[in-house]
Amino acid sequence: MSLEAEKAHANAAITAGERRRAALAEVDEAKFSWFHAKACIVAGVGFFTDAYDIFGISIAATMIGYVYHQGGASTANQDLGIKVAHSIGTFFGQLLFGWAADQIGRKRMYGVELMIIIVGTLGQAVAGEAPGISIYGVIIMWRFIMGMGIGGDYPLSAVITSEFAARRIRGRMMAAVFSAQGWGNFTSAIVSIIVVVAYKSEILAEPVTDLKAIDQCWRLIIGLGCVPGAIALYFRLTIPETPRYTMDIERNIKQASQDVDTYLTTGTYVVDPIHNNERAEVPKATLSDFASYFSQWKNFKILFGAAWSWFALDIAFYGLGLNSSTILATIGFGSYTSGSKQLQMYQTLYNVSVGNIILAVGGLIPGYYFTFAFVDFWGRRPIQLMGFVLLTIIFCCMGFGYHAMLATASGKKAFVFLYCMANFFQNFGPNTTTFIIPGEVFPTRYRSTGHGISAASGKLGAIVAQVGFSRLKDIGGTNAWLDHILELFAFFMLTGIFSTLLLPETKGLSLEDLSHEDQTQFVRDSGIPPVSEEIARIEEEHRAHHQL
Image 1 (cartoon, rainbow, N blue to C red):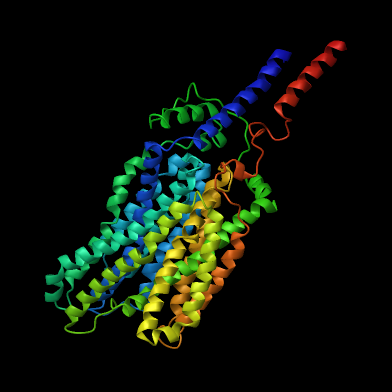
Image 2: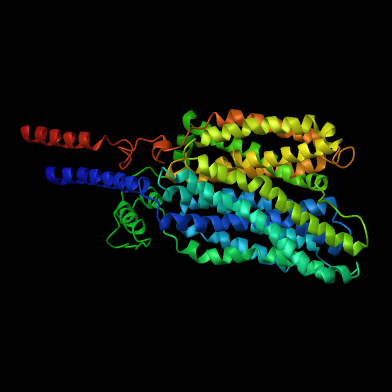
């Protein structure tokens, strides 16, 4: 190869690297636009659907118990099965889709998980039983499938939002997406009230042995959960691939640069596989590269810190949700025990729906928006630390003072207040930041995988809470162990403080700054010296050759 050809080859690397850095800078410094808002809405609708489907089962499970036990209740194992099935599915979905989004592409996988959620939701709504199969087995199967889709939504929505966001608003965009969970929870309770009230006359008139109206109620509540998902499906299938994936995994820097120029200005994008087929040399995701990257303590501690923080948080978050019936009874929205059996069923369903609205408005939803307001100014790490510290204190008060507070009227009010504060500081704290941080701290080729591992760790905590604590609370009688469970929550919140200390502050930094990789020489084969040194070496070799 001639001197000019070799230098041209080296200069091509300069051009590709500079083009990559320029495109990333354009994304990082972009002004907030309709495209950013659209990305938040499209991702947020998925989380709205997730939360609706997850929390809608709480009242639906009560209805299922009435219908299939002639006005009675499901057994403990039946109730646990239909409530924990989605968590197990979510665990596997987070790992699978987290890996697939890095290997196959964000765009190619985005929408697939929503299709799974829609199919799983409709499957539950039309589930039936026969002599050879139980309704509980059918519902558990469909909720597992739905959970797989919900699991996929976590890494995909987090990573797509973070990779499209400008660095100064990235935290707020991700918090806005995650806050849709609160509205999904709230909406499921609203829909429950509307459906229950609409069927009031039929519920009160039906014999206990044929509860057709209540059977229609739970199917309607569950089935409506697929409506927002169906609306968002088209937009998910047509969202462009993120520029970071196109550059750093597909290695097509020219196409990514064109994408940035078009969709940040016009909101559209054009794939030109013929003219934009410039493949750069960048680090590739392989098993050996994964092991090499995360074998370094500076990288592994971040993965461990993100995963354990989410695990600890979800033990309390889902464990607290399991005991909401105690809080609802304390504020007068528990089970109704007067009058006819039909009146008891109707009033209990109504009370639970209203109580869930109160709990959502009293702590869940406000917490998300406090995080939204402060996350890009105060930072992710301080918010997460503050949340874990205050939750440790709150759960200590609730656990060690449990019996004393519930013994008096004023004490019950204090207990309900602490419960709402626990909900508030979970969301204005680690529940939101454990979603945001893993979407920022890993390199592009492992960003979705890392987020999936962290999220799956959290879901493992949810499974521990749902399965383990649902058994513990009945030791020695119903809710006899509840004080000790709250004390265990305090312990896990304490461990969350230490795992948070392993995490970096991501506020205001680019995703590339957070990857712990040298960006100036990113576009080149490992082992090749910097481009300026390569050109100098080529010139020196040619001079030596001519001297000979």
